[in-house]
Image (cartoon, rainbow, N blue to C red; front, side, top):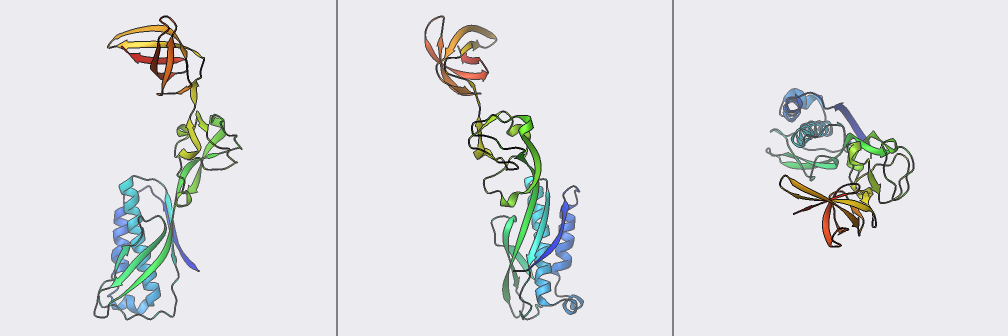
Length: 252
C-alpha cells in the first residue's frame, strides 16, 4: 500500500503543544468553503489525520518526558472514495493503545450526513539505544568497549531497549549477541561478584558500630543479593548481603 510521508523533527523546543494545536485548528476546520474547494476528501482525511497525530504524539512525548524524533506516514486512501462534504468540523480519535507504531485514527463527520472513516498510519519514534559493537558470547561481562549508543526506531523493539550505557556495562549476557544488536533487559543479568569458596569480609553493623570478621562464601552472589556465608571465627553459617566484591554485610 502506498504511503504519504510527513515531516519529522528532533524534539527540542518547548512549543510542542502550540504547534500541535495550530496544526489541529488549521486542519480540523473543514467547514471552510475555501478548504473544501482546495482539496479532495481523501486529501482532507489525510490532513486531518496527520494534524491529529502530530498533536497526539507531541502530547504523548511531553507527558512521558521522552526525548527523540519521530516520523509520521499516513497511508494513501482510495481516490475513488466519495463521501458527502461535512457541514461540521471533523473529529478524530485514536483507535490504538498509544500513538507509536502502526496506528488507526477514526475520522468522523457528525453533520447532517454523518459518516466514519478509519485511516491507518505509521508513527516511528527514534531514540538513542544501547547496541553492541562486536559479537559477544553468552555469559560475557559487558565492557565499555563492547557497547555504544545508536539511533533506532523503538516502535520496532518489542523486547525493549536501554538508553544508558551504564545500564549494560558490568552486566552478564544471558545469550550470545551479534554486531549492532540492540541490548535489552532480557539479554543481561547482574554479574556475580562473589563465588562459592571465596574468602570474604563479613561486616556486622548496629547503628554507628561495626565489627569485621573473616568468612567464606557458601554460594555465588551478585550485588545486593543475600548469600550463605560461614563465619570462620565462630564456624556459624549466616545469611549476608553482598555489598561489593569480597564484601558482605549483616545487621547485628
